[in-house]
Amino acid sequence: MAGREERIAKFVEPLRVRPGSKVDLAKRFDPASTNGVASKQRGKEILARKNDLLAEYQSRLAAQDTYGVLVVLQALDAGGKDGTIKHVMSGVNPQGVSVHGFKVPSAEELDHDYLWRYARRLPRRGEIAIFNRSHYEEVLVVRVHQELLERQKLPKAARGKDVWKRRYREINDWERYLTDNGFRVVKLFLNLSKEEQRIRFLRRIDLPDHNWKFSRADVAERAHWDDYQRAFSEMLSNTSTDWAPWYVIPADRKWYARIAAGAAIVNALIDIDPRYPTVSDATRRELREVRAALEAQAPEGAAPDPFEAGERAGRDGAKTAVARS
Ligand code: AMP
Ligand code: MG
Image 1 (cartoon, rainbow, N blue to C red):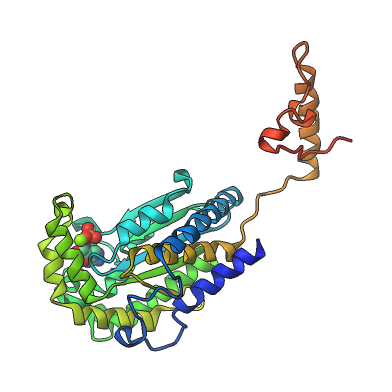
Image 2: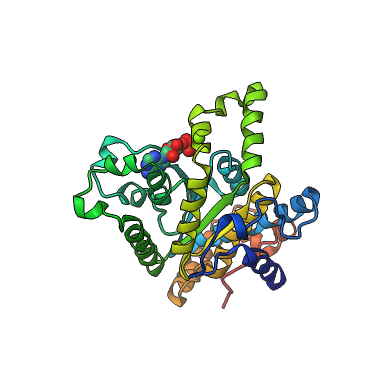
């Protein structure tokens, strides 16, 4: 076990943005990297095992009911957010996960402070929530298209030149508050190259089943590529913190992005190390009494306690948790 967990920590470490470091996306991060994973086949093997780990930790997270996990997914259009969510979450218990997408804010949302709509979708304790786009749009699309800031009905003092620095600080503070209170924030940026985006847009045009995904607006956004690269670089430089670091996931190869995103989430869960609750001595005594009563109700010929008799032990490995005596 320890080996697996250490391997995951090692695997994600190079993807983490060191808090306080100045990031220039174009220079430092290669969207086509696979971080030493040799092939898609090898990637699939790793992915299968990682999903087992994810399911196990999720189950413990839910049982412990103390911590929650917020997964923040950001990317440029065609970066693969939807596919990543689908693959990472296959195999987890849907009862413990929610996914929330954020689009152009509604009139009601614009009538509140800018973090309001994100705060309403935070996970409960024991849950994992995935944000498909997130509060980071408030320093990305809103920064690239400043007219969106105008629509936010801010008082004059809150939309001055220092607005982005201030938002970075407010977001960092908010995430620190969440972390201090048991909610871990895992931030994943799917880093796509401009050429791979071009190819994925063409694919959406060429394949009839993918036409629905094509949006003219996405192509218009592509014209702002450099502005977005700058906005992402600034965001990464200012909001990768000790309590909520960013992971830059190379996204040109979908199979790799899925493994890496999953690994970063599992790594956070390993760090939380949720445990199944144990029961008190008093509860254990109570369980013994109830067991005795249930055993007394066994029909003619039936084992009083088939679990302890080992009748099912071969099948599901059940062990009696509450000792006799
Ligand atoms: P999609 O994720 O493709 O469904 O698109 C959602 C759209 O909503 C994108 O064009 C985003 O840029 C836009 N969007 C998301 N958050 C915001 C925001 N806070 N302000 C303005 N536009 C946003
Ligand atoms: Mg879109």
